[in-house]
Length: 335
Image: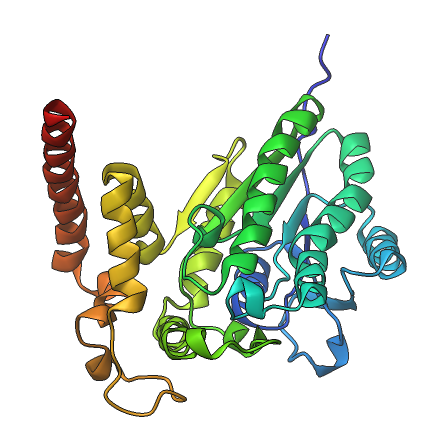
């Protein structure tokens, strides 16, 4: 007979990594306000602005000793961990593959992937003993689509996280442990500060790379508020059996819809238009204004605020998919 899942009769205890800013901070504030007992982590918690109801603890996800000490501190104070939210992460190299130092790539994987595995493996024995728990990994729409160009290694870390999370979900389900991902698109946070310049600059890439990084920084600056992602995380945390993938933000929903509907050749053209077709009229070392972005500005902030556009974009993608399918079918018949 399978053991019954433990029913909580107390506020759930949450361990949240990367809680000092951005999505992590918004999530910590929301969960604490909803009655959760939240332990947020930061490399230097003394520098983090305090949040009512949130206890900050030091954590470096790349250090096994730091992870062990943090988890033990939560156990000493709360006696259990009901929800683990792996949120800490960075963007890393904003460069072409041959412009990138492999040591930077390894460091990025240590934070975005191996760090998450390390924290999860430390918490899992606790959840197995409890016969309950929820693990939420903060992935990205980049985990499904390797975009934008010149950020392929960031996407690679998120692709690895997607595969790991899906496999882990099967492994721990017999212990009544739920595993899910939240996949945001662009969000207005300080993560743009973690973008690293090319280590081995190649002049042939310079012009288009600068344009793509400008668009990416604009997407971050004009993106969804992190509170929107926090709401999705709260919804997943409350579900007894959450879906594996949970998109957060209209931009991520639209691009995934396009990936599913459009023929691949047409989708590639869409990505090229999104990131290669814009030509700045002013300096290339500043974040462009929405007006300077022209039609490209709709990729970042307007879909969230404009209901008509939110409805029109899926319709447009569906129409393009049908047209593209017909064209490809006719070409195959001719050949």
